[in-house]
Length: 117
Length: 235
Image (cartoon, rainbow over the protein chains, first blue to last red):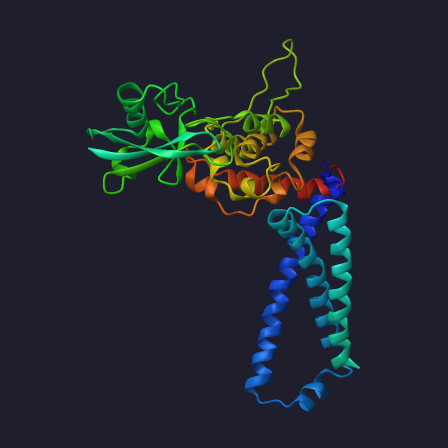
């Protein structure tokens, strides 16, 4: 039976990575939501928001970290979901998830750079 | 009198209805025994000690896995009705009897055997009763192997190769045993997708364990120990 393409050590590392990225996400989501609420309730226009984010290395660093945490966290979680709900396991699943990670990294960084540049 | 529906058959089968007299302090096992002795001698079920030590009489009562010898009818019957089925997550051999081989094979896969390092020529190793390891072992050691936790675990249902709460709890008590010499090998056996890292912390095992053990806590402990071993590069 095609059991697992990854070593036990790698499987354990994935778990550690998911825990660590979850901790990071808890922080990022709170900051992100607070920022959204502030921007909307303060009545900032798109131009005013862009004026704050364009060229700001602090926002670039924060949202890049946010994207990185998502790119690590989501595919590892989906790995378990795919196994438990559709019984997809083995190397094909892990390669597909690597592809998925690349897609969300690309989409996420595109959005981050969209408001930075 | 109460109406009792009992599973008949194996994977395929149906519930059969029986009428059983109520008594004071009656247990679910008493009910099943009454049916087998008085109403239908072909009913298959399993029990041994009747006092909550052997772990052989667990069944699904009104949808919940329980040790039937220590479960009073008063506690579980609803409007004098009861439904008794075999344990979930295990193949049914016949009626209320499940095939528990896979359950115990997983204890072996999780390296559930003690492996000491001393020979008989050496003195006994002394373990302080209040040492953290001994306290952790005490919390998990009273498992009777009834498979109530295994039957209640949704992760076992979702991925059949998952070792399950009982085997992982056993591994945890050995990892915490300072006399044991197989710790790292055992951590390797219980790490990863089929092991402790698949636990979703639903805590059904902890909720249902008749001995009040928390396999969830042991599994969390294993995750911690494995994370440490990965960090140190010893896994």
